[in-house]
Image (tube, rainbow over all chains, first blue to last red; front, side, top):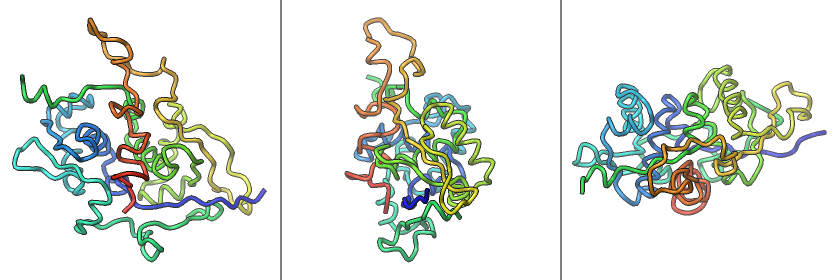
Length: 118
Length: 149
């Protein structure tokens, strides 16, 4: 059998949060609460920690990673955040995306044959 | 009404809860849901590919796959054969959405008087809990959040 199928690998929020995947838990929570970024995500750090069953320090580190990624932006309220989706992050142009996507048709993804793993 | 309480989300079971011991697994699951259109297509990326993509070591990726299979969120469909005989040819997985996991495996909040079990065990489809599986959240490739820039 010779496989001919290909999977389209592309940049996404998980790539931006690869150094601290725990931040994805907060991001997914923030997306749900904010209705995919339509509302502001309001939650204190202790509440985030309690919601996810983490200690406060773990929550703080993950939240810092998430803020650093640009996927959430703190508002004037210390506990309120605007939540960005990946396409908005790209539009903002302040963060680098997965370099493997460079040079592809859409500039953001590439086809990777599964028969030729990296 | 307490403002904080008003904003506090209702907690429901979700894929994150099942993968709470393996944060890297949730990253792979996020990616898999995005690439497969919410589990509609097969997921075919080798572990070395993923290790390169995320810049993680291969053992980390293997451990994450073990977690994904143990939770039932990944189901092996076909082994990595073919592909000119390369040893690390990608296995093919079905990406299982949270709503399709057995209810018995779900986390259930302590029951509150007046609340039905349906209210307590959340599902992704209605937007109340879990990873978005219907195009309404972080992963879908349709709607406002494409996840792909």
